[in-house]
Amino acid sequence: MSDLLTTMRELVIANRILAREGVVDAYGHISVRHPTNPERYLISCSRSPELVTLSDIMEFTLDGVAIDPRDRSPYAERYIHGALFEKRTDVHSVIHNHSHAVIPFGVTAVPLRPLVHVAASIGDKVPVWDIRDKFGDTNLLVVNMAQGRDLAEFVGGGRTALMRGHGCVVTGATIKEAVITAVYMQVNARLQMEAMRLGNVIYLSPGEIQEHQKVIFGPLSLNRAWEYFVMRAGCQGM
Ligand code: MN
Image (cartoon, rainbow, N blue to C red; front, side, top):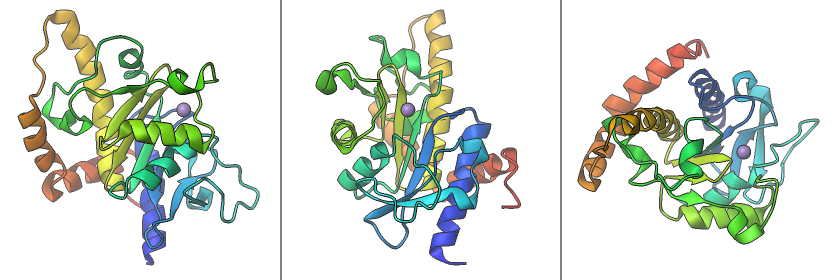
């Protein structure tokens, strides 16, 4: 199987996993950098992730121009992906989602912070990007490269960011890393909401975050989690 086909299949499976875990619903998307051309990326056409198949996967330049659109419509917010691939050579997969669990932490002064080891990869205190700071009143969607680049600049060298009143963005060195981070970011948001109702929360320290990231992105842990999520999403035959 070619590198391209292998990558496309993994991207389809990642779409199904994110849907199965409730990280995405009708909306949200995941992309991957093209395996042989770093100036291009792959992402589904405008379709809900649970429904994505191989024939939906489209190729784009980093500034969001479709290479072979045929009769397929692109996601309006694809600029999030291209801008991050443009800024970050270490990033090979990007997820944008509207997980309900994370939204409260983007609209209040309470930062989303890892309190459980499996969420260490979200980073210490997830920063909140506000599109209004630079672009005033908009429909909140990231619909051009100027907005995408502003978001990418804000993410900087980090792995995640919240988007005020909208959702979040998650990056990874691989599809697997991005998916695991997005799944456990949602888990952490739910647990943090619960824990805060009980009292003061003890969060992971920066040292613990660093140590656990080595574990969760090690092959033993990552492949085990991937196999589990693939099965849960019913993708073992894909
Ligand atoms: Mn969105």
